Image 1 (spheres, rainbow, N blue to C red):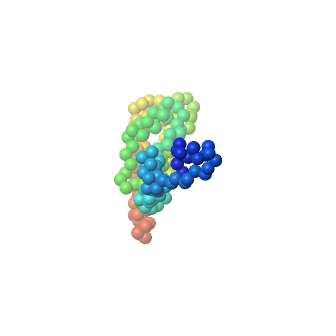
Image 2 (cartoon, one colour):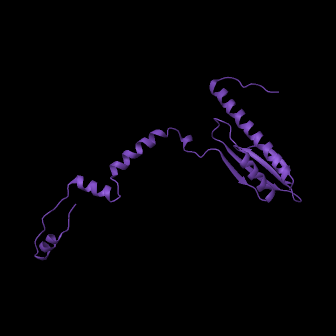
Image 3 (cartoon, rainbow, N blue to C red):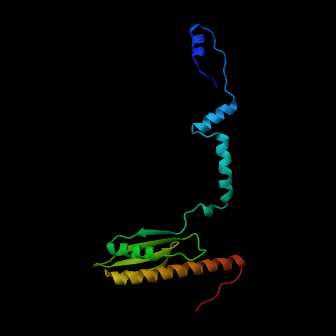
Length: 167
């Protein structure tokens, strides 16, 4: 790195070649740090601990989404109540809940709850808030039970055991 100073300008006017003036490497690094620009080797070293923490691609995914695909106010009310009451079961990961609405004749609507693209709940809604609230609570219970059963089934499959039959 060269420094341009008034003495260099005098050499240039006289037609002489200016002497090379260099800055020690440590001074450049200090200047870069103080100026807000980090040294490239420092940035690489800072990323290593973060990369070591992330071991699986499943840790990079956004987990436990509740997606709203409602159209009417009735469907939106159902979604909001569901979302407010929702508390995911412990140790359950890698799931997405989709609340989908299909309009019907009159003021009603057909609402579906899908967990990981599997329909687990489908119900006709009426435009009465107390009924919407009751059905949303019922949908929360069904979704939580489905996710918990799915987690238990995955654990049994990993252990090589058969699932418990329910009647």
